[in-house]
Length: 475
Picture 1: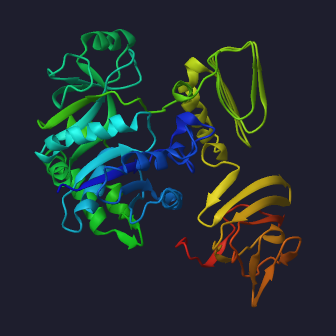
Picture 2 (picture 1 turned 45 degrees about the vertical axis):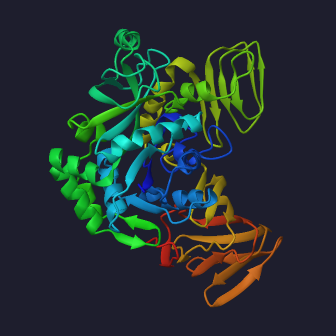
């Protein structure tokens, strides 16, 4: 029996969905089209086909996010391969293939970006089953999306003649004639009119060894670097931490450029599965439920004489007499954009980075492996945070050179270490952590611990931490 192992690519930063998606918490970890996050939806979509636990390739900074969300989705035994630096999809998939073969197996790998929407999961599953015989025979299969329109934001795949007429799903696996770059509008329309061109979905199916063979043929330098990084990886539970220097030496390239455009074994299966890469706010509007006026929203929205707009907000938002807007409100930023200009959100992120503004990377609420903290007020000499610690969560044993802290428990039970004392606090109780004291906060209870932390001192930056011990392996 052929083994099928999903590979979930989760290393992207998702800056085009700023301010909701940020580098420290990108879109694959957000619930954008339902109650589950995009990573969780990707796994649940493929779970009925999988005979092996997934391999997730993620940025090292996102390791606890990925691990926790997989746990919540009921995944047991996933391998989470951690990239110390981003090197695009070709090296990431190579690392996943090496992980898949580490125990002597050679499964089919179903490679899926973890931040796409597929509305027709049964059709997707049927397509994977249809593509498996070709992959078992040594082909490198990709899935081409039957185009709904002359889209200029996607690359295209030109396919050989099919069995059921041009431009249709269900034609069977076909030879790839060529991959083409994102076209202009006239060229995109010509592709749609031709009927033999499909959107490049970035989803692939092939045997692990076959991908490594083809990569070794066309990019041996890349394969050597990734193999060295994998051989030098540190393994910590489910985490496989690729060797930093070796992986950084791997050329950065996509699987399309490194392998698929060069191999003579590339095949494509045309599919119609309700696919969307959710690469912009307008794309998210397109896959969201809309009212009679074409408005879509997440949160409380009143729209008066307004049409075709998208709103994401934590507070109530009213639209009056506006059309085709995108309005996104988070705790620390508001985006207002014309819906046909949302691709320029990346320019906002670039400016934030150039100005060294934290808004490009962090939300006001920052997630940590033990829970999260939200900086709710700050001025010269003080900062107020709302801290949440998950059941069983345990902050590092630490001290601060520049600040003292006052903790007030709002909900739950806190176990506090302060120098040589260990004691518990409950709701409406508080304690003081003097400057320089070794301290630790833990949640020994079964409910989330919430407390207010008031910091005071000359410097309140997050880098004022001396760690003596940490259960999460942070230095």
